[in-house]
Picture 1 (tube, rainbow, N blue to C red):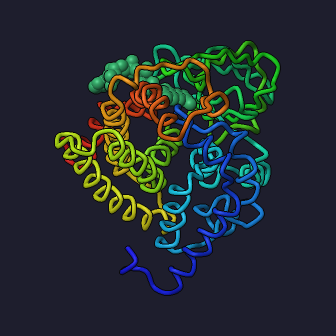
Picture 2: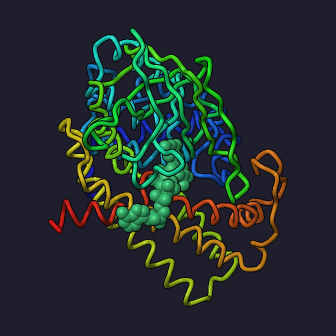
Picture 3: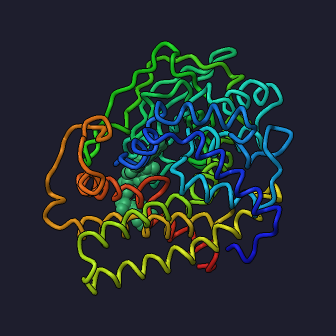
Length: 394
Ligand SMILES: Cc1cc2nc3c(=O)[nH]c(=O)nc-3n(C[C@H](O)[C@H](O)[C@H](O)COP(=O)(O)OP(=O)(O)OC[C@H]3O[C@@H](n4cnc5c(N)ncnc54)[C@H](O)[C@@H]3O)c2cc1C
């Protein structure tokens, strides 16, 4: 990589590294490394996000007029890579990476003025209300109803698998505003304040022991029509636009490389001479290199103000597989010791072990949670279907 960087890029990389080493404290790093779920608790990342905001770096990928940095794709890549290896995960990807680009593309000036600064600063924390019981892969089957009543909609229904809803003060949601015609033509995209009367959140604890998911129930929840993104019954286009950013709008290579480095250390400590495990390690390393190149190519599209397009499904599919392979190999390297199950969560608040043993204690819950990578954001089968249609023309 150094071979491709010009002196300005290298100076930028030094600046980013310096910033991150000043602001990612050892306690924060430990909490990030020992998070066994797929999202970091916002309390762990809030301070770092604040520092990034003060520096003007909290939403580098947004257009400059909305607070983005205007960096070249190479600089954006360097930034994402360095953040990943320092453990600096996105504070609230649902805000900055999912709904942010949607508000920029489809929001009114008033909506942009209201919501975008609060995403940049971290004042708002967003959750995603797409899935419902009976509506996951077949998202257009959703039933949560929004009835028009003067200047408001009145919402009744239920969402499920809503990640981090217990931390969120805002929700973007798909609701049904019509049952006429094609199912996709009766869906509307709404922004809902979580403290609106009638919104109730119920936790779901995952099979790895972490509380990340929730159910959300809506009982006569009044939402102003001013909170609608785009036209009534035209939310399907908005929803799909958002999904491309969810599946492929950022560089995961840095984050996954950091997890890979931990795995390499674990294998080195536990089973350095095991040829089969070393071969799997080499395979993952090669896949990582290939994916990184595709990540970079997508950055150029985003730089030009575009959306990721169907390649986002390929990124989602392959990154899920690589992350699962890392989690699986960690359990195999830990061997029977991985079965020393600890139910207390989060681990960083309860464990007092040498680092290598901490990593072993985290291996199994991480493996169990990693099964979710090929489900969240649309399952692998759905990504394969999209690729078959859009890239292969089947
Ligand atoms: C970690 C995690 C976080 C999540 N966070 C959120 C969130 O914040 N907000 C939110 O709205 N949702 C969230 N979800 C829900 C997620 O989007 C859905 O679980 C996902 O879309 C699959 O839907 P489903 O669970 O209803 O499974 P189903 O749609 O019932 O699928 C069951 C199985 O059938 C297969 N299948 C279904 N249809 C087809 C088809 N046409 N062709 C081939 N195979 C098919 C699927 O691939 C899957 O294997 C999250 C899920 C996970 C695991």
